[in-house]
Image (cartoon, rainbow, N blue to C red; front, side, top):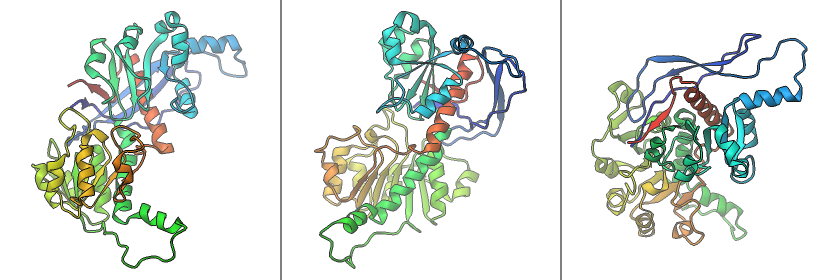
Length: 394
């Protein structure tokens, strides 16, 4: 599994009037994922050149603006707007620090554009990073991934080109933990089914025996106690839940006590005791199909499986069988494999499943924070500064 040096991104420090070099200062308390935290801080300054202009009422003509843009480091993006492109407000944010080059512009003039591109901003897993692209970008130094998961990137291949990879672990933690809690509550209280009953033209009355289960005081088993898993535990504590967790590394005693979490060295013990099992792991060769027929069989028949990590962490065929045969009560999934599922997939026809379209970080705030964190990462690489969140191949 990859290792990530994670830092919290704070607000930008205003510049002194008349300063010719744009300088942003960030303070990053080191927070190691997967069970380790440090409390030292690293302060660094990020600089890159912009075209100097004098203060006062002097206007900047079009030629000067072009020159200023050309001096910014080039960043490759898939496009702006549309179904898969970078959102327009994020593109505007990137333009403050980079010369944006879309994939269409790059393919239309490879010889010139390839020399300008020093970074790639990956948004929603796009553009795809393959060997052909890397070979065509001789000055590429960093790939800034917007999001924490990097299973769509071949880290070893990218590293062989001398290119660094960064991600955005801090921007994603709160919203992803929120969606985990939302799925747990929605499944427990059968909110989606309830909504369908209310709006159905066939509904004549509300059945008194239509019941859900309570989250309060239930046992939650968290598999993967990194930053997101810990945020889930913090939220679950407010529901007076009994919290179990399984992780590669045990959290410090004071961290466990802060949320009332109990460590399970064996995942099997967690599965057997939990009313709700939430998956919060990275997708790696070791975690692919982590939950299969055997693991589902260990769970309580009244238990619910919640997945906010990656779809391939679950053996979906085994999950379908378990849900159809009432081996477990229900499942609530923000991720599947593939996404979206084929329209005839059996998971889509089960009434004890909730599936959302991978919206763990789909909030106005999170999307912007991820872009800001990615920008900080890329600028740090380009300026030879300490990198807030670098991802290394195993």
